[in-house]
Length: 289
Image (cartoon, rainbow, N blue to C red):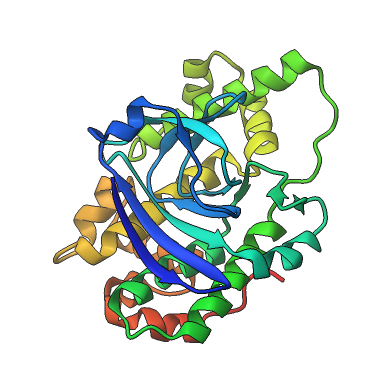
């Protein structure tokens, strides 16, 4: 495991972690470190199983919510292992969170995860770049961090309708199976009919259940996963972006750049350079209120 503490203050800590596939932490039960709650942004798909919960395929489309001391195991779902950015919420932030409805109670998250919308994901990505390239502006870092947390809380799922336990478990398992196929075959041009057939369900049932369980349509989930993977890979991409576009399943360079700008509000060239991260953060549109 490689851990890098990028920022620390009385308000918030920010750290980056890499767990290669051969890392010893895959083989043992782990406990969440620290004294306070965390908001974690996975960079790659990874199977996470919290104690007493079913496995979940976490990934760039979600912000994972962890409480101190929680026990969990992980299973790699990507050749890179597991890598993520961690926002460590310190005591001064907790009264602020306690004022949110059904999100945080008695010093702990009441949800396991929330969809990470496009602004939240872009801002945490730019924030990590700013912290690694400096010089660091503490006011910019802490204000951006608070806005990111607010944006995550705004996307917490509403209380779901009451369902029979077996139905609930079956729907969860179906959505997880679909997430795994989409993540592992990111570049493939799958149809809804083919995906439904492979998972043993009607395409219309699959589409409805997936949206109920994840908050995304199947197409939107795959598109966002492609674009967020591209966002992470852009700084290391040399030369034309056409190869990256095709590797991620886009029909052409122009298809990729159009989709990227529609998703993040800036062209790929604007986030390719690490030097521009601070400028983009300072000019960024507000996150969800």
